[in-house]
Image (cartoon, rainbow, N blue to C red; front, top):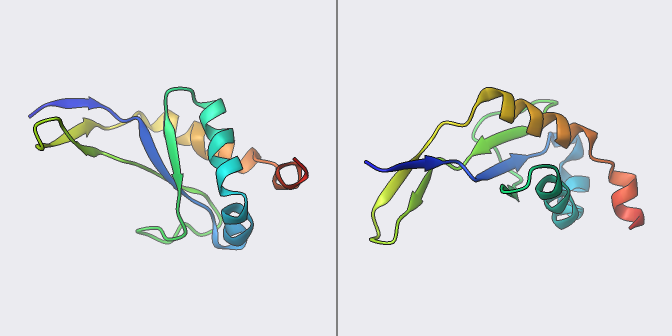
Length: 99
């Protein structure tokens, strides 16, 4: 089986911020892309588990190769997930809407 590094993440905001973050979804994803060049982010409303008061950060672990075979990615380091989560927490919604 072929492996590669994870390059995409799904981010789920906490319930209390979900509506506001989804209203600024493109700006939020762009903010994360600037913080973490080389990675892409999709913002979602639903998480596979309850995220409580924290942002859920889920790596996209598989992809379809050129030969239509499903391939698996290497698990990203836990520090990267933590850094992404901290960047999510520091996103300034008010500045986002002012832009």
